[in-house]
Amino acid sequence: MTHDPLRRRLLAGTAALGGLALLPRLAHAQGTVTSAIYPGSWEEAYRSIVAPALKQAHGVDLQMQPLYAVDQIAKARAARGNPFFDTFLLDPGPRVTAIEAGLFEKFDPSRLSNASKLQPGMADEHGVTVAAQFVGIAYNPKKFDKPPADWPDLFAEPYVSRLGLTGFQTTFGTVSILEMSRAFGGQGTDVEPFFAELKKALPRIAAIGAPASMPSLFQQGQCDIMYTNTQTVGTLKGRGVDIEFVRPASGVITFFTTLHIARGAEQADNAYRYIDTVLSAPVQEQLMKAPYFMAPVASDVPLDDTLPLSELSEMASMVQHDWAQINPLRAGWIERFNREVAR
Image (tube, rainbow, N blue to C red; front, side, top):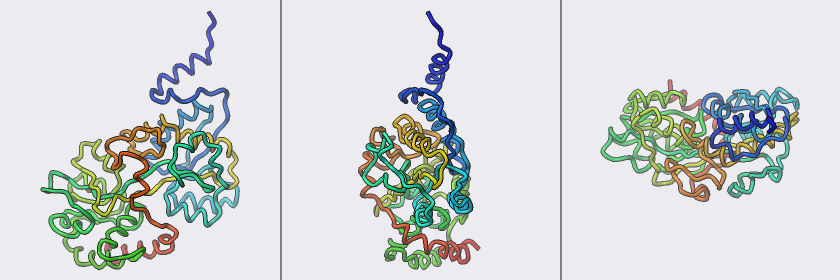
């Protein structure tokens, strides 16, 4: 009987990875790929789940640069075609900005073995969707007799005096405010109805804070209702916080997080391997579970019952927004919110 050290290492690695054992075995080492990644839970999730899966499947080492979207774009612009990383990770607003700035290589979805599992429009010449986000209302069910039904309820009792308010700095904040404004008669990118209602409600609002502070404010009981995404709700529930996600009567909001290959990327081939690994069913399924709660986009992943849909095709009928129209106005909205509300 012969003993193959490489085979023993592969078997040991497969056992340790558990659900990732369905990924194909690597043939030989292929080098590295560097990805920009959001700091915090995204970086932790990709380090613990995606990196070992990529190594196992392709022999590629994943290196990450923790950067928020605005910093990714600033660094890419400063690099002038010699990027600091091979791939971007972006939400829809920054994605539009980067496309307009010509920061991406032309993307070829045919190079992804998992592209056929995506919903129509999720892969194009700019990049590919790797996670969905669902936005609605979160509330503490022990503090209210019944949940709010829709966005206008947030400005009325008993909810307004327990409301945690944040502004336009994040994607989820921006789209939530747009839906509030629409509920009070606004159309498109008109946020005046929101500010008008907010002016009347402001003295009664429980807490106003930066987006990153809202989960802590909720957990500490400084507010009992807020607008947020299912990822935050899942994280707080995992900590034992009393919180439930409410689907607004006007519809759950959805937006998508995408991966893109940087123009001039040195490791474009490995970037495709990396993106394909992110879209593989074992990886998508593990990212969906606690503690990360990232909604999958691959159709071969059984959906968790914490998500506000039973089939991925339902995303097409959810509320979405045109970020090409939002982007030119957003800086002004942020400045106005900070001046009139967060002072």
